[in-house]
Image (cartoon, rainbow, N blue to C red; front, top):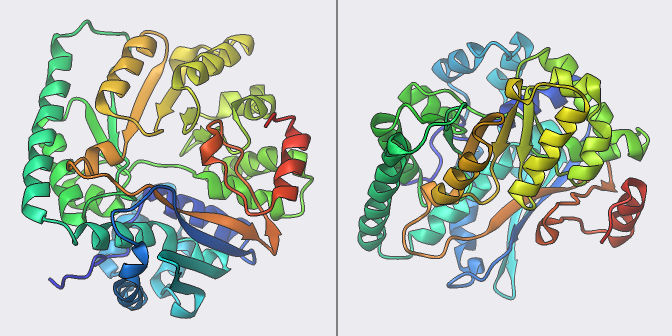
Length: 396
């Protein structure tokens, strides 16, 4: 196998496919822009990777879905046949993505029809991460990574000796975007699947789910909800419209809603009895997870919905000890799931990159995420950000 980072178009997160299908069916003409951002200090300028990044993007744009890959995706019951027909002819277009550098900074921008550029995000992040960590001593990193992996597995096995709760502990791998390498993610996921199958319940990586016989995990990300800020609906109604379109697309499947596009309080104001009954649960991705979980349970109680029939999924920068602590807090009160990313797939004794590639504009208009964690708020237009805060009564 070549030393390219990406070998298969299945090597991405499930929610890319589920959002892709929904937007292809509902809003196929949307034009969008996605931008790469590194939020922390790297050990060397990421601009040094520019030539390698461009070579990897060239290669990515030669890949196509193979018949066996299409057969796997088709077998997922919520995937529709016309989407498979689209994937059969799909190929990334190199003219839609550009990588450049200045002052030591790496810039990557994807622009074009959203259904042709939204898929770049996960691949770009995996490419930059793997190229970056190839510059360091791999033997030392893998030795430390395997030592830490063994500790995590033993920690999880110790759960059996702890007091049991009404609902089981369920762990998912959400670590593709910031993984040390594709090979390392495979090793980690395979180890958890083999050593702790009673708690390890799946991965967001569609390729690994297929290859290892695991459940692919995921529903929606911020970009799906943000897109609706620029689709001509009244801004105050964008969440309601996005959630309703999701309900109509999936008819009961993929029922975990993401809550922090404009913050938990503004989300719950829209998440009325209709949605609360239809959706299986909620996903946390910013802010204090205990506060968030208590708000969610209080909301279900106000609506007289039995929280034991719902699920809270935690996915914000989790470590295994933090996930276990949250399980101790909520395990008797509702169903739970824990999606751990960087701490599973890039815990190698080196500082991981905090990189994202986010939707910044749709149909020529700015879009924004008003995260419950201020540092995760994303928007390149302060005027729109202020307007969004005003509309949803979100304090700075």
